Length: 308
Image (cartoon, rainbow, N blue to C red; front, side):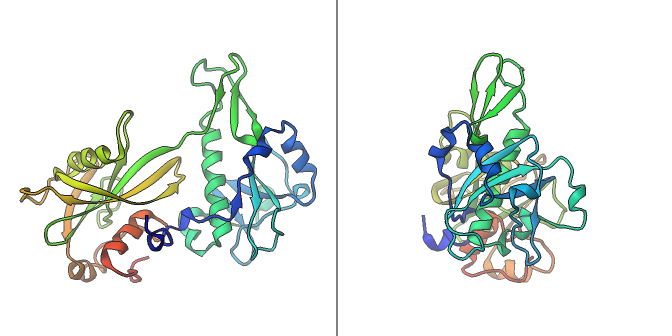
């Protein structure tokens, strides 16, 4: 994995010690909520509370209600943030934000590139773990309610004592090039018609990443590919994915342009660098916070600043 490529992935940044051993203390959350040096990141409807300067607003525990679900994110390792190194940080999901009626809230997709390394990592971690909590209120085995344990990193089935751990869904995303080094972009059925991005898909059970690359691309575009090469990864907590970036080449002997599957992908287009530059007023590329944008710019050879 290239460090230059990794530096282009906003949600892969972090300055947090997740402090996993501390989670074993069953009284950790109670103690941290009483500790005035603790700071809390509020999340409401998938957005984070923002300070006046656009950074994350980290509150004292006595400035916010504990709520039903809080999680210990770890300790700040940042030397440039207002909070001292070692500050413990919690996150809490608010059911109501009426007492923050005049506050500013930020969506991770929109503000990721403006956040510091620490804040980008905090927001990504908080959103991912809270999304997991919201979908595991009941045991997948018995249907009984689950309770939060280990500082928010485990839920336990109250009937069977089964421990349910957070899960992440791996998904591959691929920059596909042909013999002329043109890049393949597709338009998804869920997007506006002029938005184009890389092809991607979830890894199936019992499948290697490389096999997933070849299967997904063939299914969505009819284009056989070879030589998948791993570039890097980025968490994508919308709601629970880990995007694994690859490049791949069109298989030798294939001469078609591909056929969209008509279900997920409605249109396919091949772009040279000059053709992509000439199309920027007509098409929309993925946002700067996405690994798709990073892979496209990796192929392009420089940032594409014209596109939001």
